[in-house]
Image 1 (cartoon, rainbow, N blue to C red):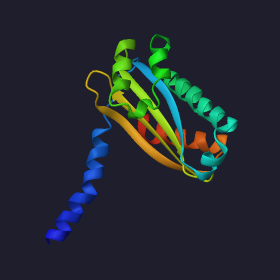
Image 2: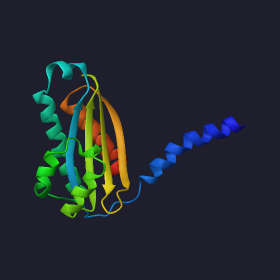
Image 3: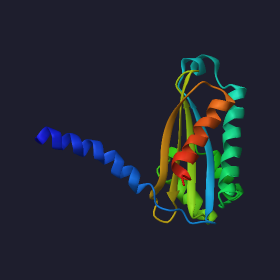
Image 4: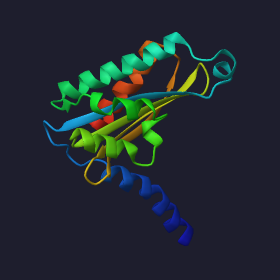
Length: 169
């Protein structure tokens, strides 16, 4: 009986955690989008270095994200006032709260950061995290695995995150 109860608790913890990431977002809120970080942990990346097509896909995701945020009624802030600090930050998604501090200096309500990690040319992982600037609390966060290293597959992963978690209706 105790095993069943413990199993049930372990199954429900992720469900309850996701429920906490479903608070309504303020319409018209100001968002500091600090971009997408591309992390290549594949063997191919270790041997061949950066690829132009993957850099272009990262920019495509950034442009698509900015447009989607605007389409949803949010004001996407200009990062120019923090450009130097952002350029010197390897990954805003893992900088011990620097993303929240940078967004606060911009006057943002929310801060959004994202990553794409390439495990191989077939397997990639994408994640986005949206935080409240005042509290630092994660309001939306989701990671998806995608297959295939193409514009279409990257956009499909991004659109899945937006449709099924960030802006689900």
